[in-house]
Image (cartoon, rainbow, N blue to C red; front, side, top):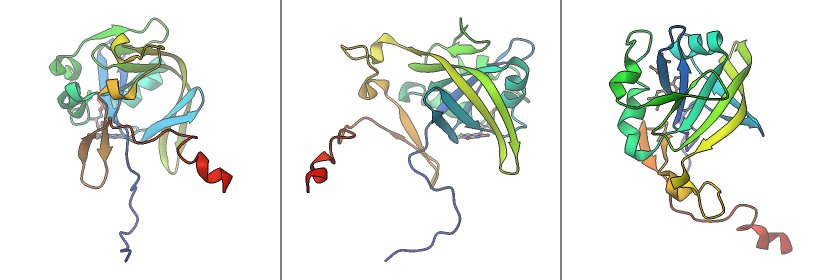
Length: 190
Ligand SMILES: Cc1cc2nc3c(=O)[nH]c(=O)nc-3n(C[C@H](O)[C@H](O)[C@H](O)COP(=O)(O)O)c2cc1C
């Protein structure tokens, strides 16, 4: 028996992405973003409120970094989704995390997050469906600790967590349950 739940943005899991930018004064800002992700091989899309400090920074600097938050820094990641750089200029300092300037784009790289996409803004979209930023991925930085012996990112080592839009929970990810383009391949032979 299925039950109608109405119109809700009920996709699961949602990512927990950390968007880091510089303000005009060089202050680091980081925000928590669930409504975004990959939209082409070398592109990401951010669906963010235009009033956020992050949006102002992106318009002025034309760049951002996007990091995967990990469980050891869950508290800080959530804080980045509560506080705003508009009202709390020392938001990033309060988190106790550290940032270094990207060598490729005009944006900070948060040192504690294990995987970071360095992105250049290529398009700002203002539609009736909201504000959207398209960014070109110019490089990916990964902590050596999250790489396997072949130099690939090992999801189990990332310690990532996802966001649940139903009840606003965070859930750790890690257990591998299959292999894409392989687990279902046997059914092709039927
Ligand atoms: C789990 C979580 C997910 C969020 N996802 C988004 C999002 O996708 N888009 C958005 O505009 N705001 C999102 N927010 C809210 C922003 O992170 C929040 O408003 C933040 O204060 C903005 O920071 P800033 O003004 O310093 O840029 C999310 C917050 C949380 C806690």
